[in-house]
Length: 260
Image 1 (cartoon, helix red, strand yellow):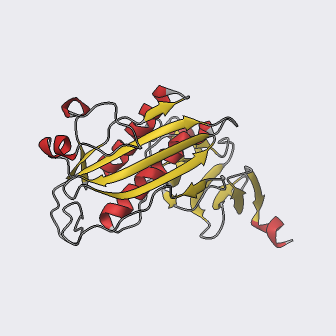
Image 2: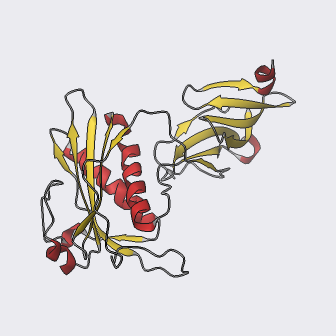
């Protein structure tokens, strides 16, 4: 991960990050027939990854590169799970798809796609992004899921993880884990003068942020199960202290201060 991680003490947090997201279904989701082919049985030991097509999201009044980057993050999340095989965009027969149009399912069956995701990213007058997507069952020729989200442009990557989570959950029946952050101890420097810093990153290694400067030794970070806080041990002198750090405000206080 960017060549900076020598040894990791890793703990994850799947809770929301305190950012305002508005979620609304924008279409009626029709139930699938019991014989739909895109359901994944994850109770077996060996699973053949499901072929899924993810054409690049279109951009309306916004940044085409950002829309393409969002699509790439979604595809990468699904591929890393081992349950999905994103198809090569060069094989797509139907091009320039609109999120509001019905796919030509025959074109997608011809390239062996079992599921299809279409989407668009629109820049709102207030500067926010609106991302819409639809998940289609290619063999049943039906829509499985349709949602839209609003967020600020700097949160586009997290939004992509949330969409990947929604797709994963709809196809597997299990909660997704892509909108997850990892807290770890980053170690750098020679063996006789190691610098240990508390850091946090997205589950795919992006958005690395250092929470401590490395002045003191830090160990054993843990996420709070109920809030956006991390507990960790720090050796500022001869005696260790336990600190509680709020990851939204970057403010830390010792356990002694908390009890006072």
